[in-house]
Amino acid sequence: MKRIIQSTDLPDNLKTIANKVFRQERLNDKEGLCLFEEAGLGLLGVLASFTREKKNGNFVYFNRNFHIEPTNICIYNCRFCSYSRKINEKGAWEYSIDDILSKVAEFKNKPVTEIHIVGGVHPNRDLHYYGNMIKKIKEILPQIHVKAFTAVELEFMIKKSRMTLDEGLKKLKEYGLDSIPGGGAEIFREAIRKQICDEKSSTLEWLKIHETAHNIGIPSNATMLYGHIENYSDRIDHLSRLRKLQDKTGGFNTFIPLKYRMANNKLSDIGEVTTIEDMRNFAVSRIYLDNFPHIKSYWPMIGKETTQLSLSFGVDDIDGTIDDTTKIYSMAGADDKKPTLSTNQLVQLISDARRTPVERDTLYNIIREYRE
Ligand code: V47
Ligand code: SF4
Image (cartoon, rainbow, N blue to C red; front, side, top):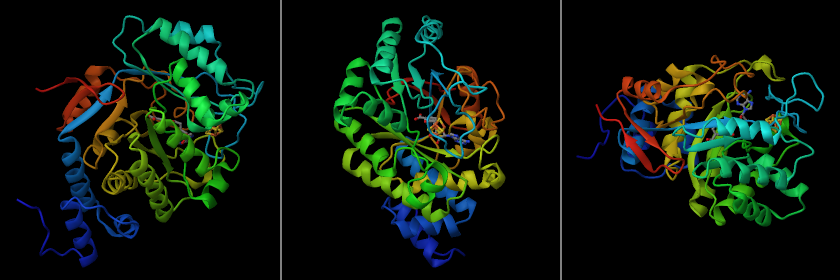
């Protein structure tokens, strides 16, 4: 039976949009904006859940992963960043390759499937330095999927090694890079990007790196940093550019909205948006990005309970066990200072929200379904 809304108190514009969603038709930018501006939370929950159930049934995915952050030394000065330091500044760190490899060796007999590597843009490290790091990681854990380096880190290391994007990404693939995480996207609208992260890779460069990667068979994720100085139109502009690129390449797996966290950075004065706003953002992203297979809620950033709530607003993925290895969000004010969840805890968190937990690998191949 078709779910079509006919006589309710909904205004006509929202009724038209709701019926388009139920017919699984693509929304245009104006309709996406209208959802942000006018739709109630209940309606957004219903529409986003309808969309997620068409794509992913009742499944909520997670994986077993750990993070490596090689350094927080960074040449850039993004105003929202709580984490980066200059060389010799108090609080700066850089792990040697040996430090990293001994951390990796701790996972030798554990059933992890993914290593996630992101960090600052170190002025002295080039593509071959990080490429060799990946190669050595795979000597220790040959089966591991390496999801590494934001487009911003990639752009710098490839330029430093005097290669074109195409050459650099192919070389990294040879070293063992399997996919690219979604960071560095922040907000694409140039006027806003200029105010929060003027120096680093531009919008066009970020999109070009992901497009080039997709063209040579490296899949990736995409993010959007929201809840700072951007408005709804800026968010729709961001989603629209991602949707266009996905139409072209089909190389994105997951979209991850990243909530701006306010502690210890230059934008702290503006505060943080509410949980209701987080849910609205998840829902509109799910409904609008009709060509993205998955929407991820990154639990170390928004907390476990908010993550559970997001499972009723379009989210079908909650990242992984993480294993206490990320500092980006704890330094920016996330509640969990040592983020780690066991597989049992992740399964419980998902089951408590009445969804079906599914362990996946990075590319969403199912490893195990947890049915009661
Ligand atoms: O690009 C930095 C964000 C990103 C803050 O692909 C902040 O699976 C909020 O790439 N408040 C890096 N966010 C993290 C990243 C990532 C994370 C989770 C999953 C995946 C994936 C990728 O962290 C940066 C920036 O957008 N960030 N500072 C802050 N104060
Ligand atoms: Fe550097 Fe990334 Fe922080 Fe920007 S967000 S200052 S690129 S570590």
